[in-house]
Amino acid sequence: MTYNRETIIEKNATLSFEFERYMLEHPAILERIPSGAEVVLLPKDDPELYRLNLEAAQTADKVGPVVYVEIEALAPARSRLVKPRLTTRPALRPVAA
Image 1 (cartoon, rainbow, N blue to C red):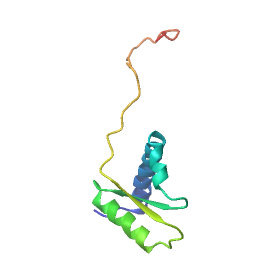
Image 2: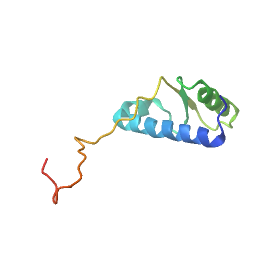
Image 3: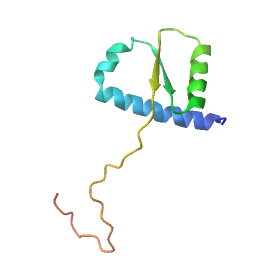
Image 4: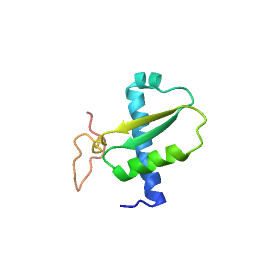
């Protein structure tokens, strides 16, 4: 499969967002990333994007250290809704939780 530019950007944006979320939940990982490092995300479940990101990192001008983050997979997105209920007549006021 060959990705177009838009697909690559979209997939990397998703990975970047999720990695930022992971760092917020696991702040100790930040200690392992040198200041000014280029972080390259390598999704093992997407060989094409893995290859493209690796090639881009290897051909880019490197000013500082490079840290490669191999990612096994993204878990499915989950909804945070609690007990959604379909109705044809909504309550006139919110029901207390």
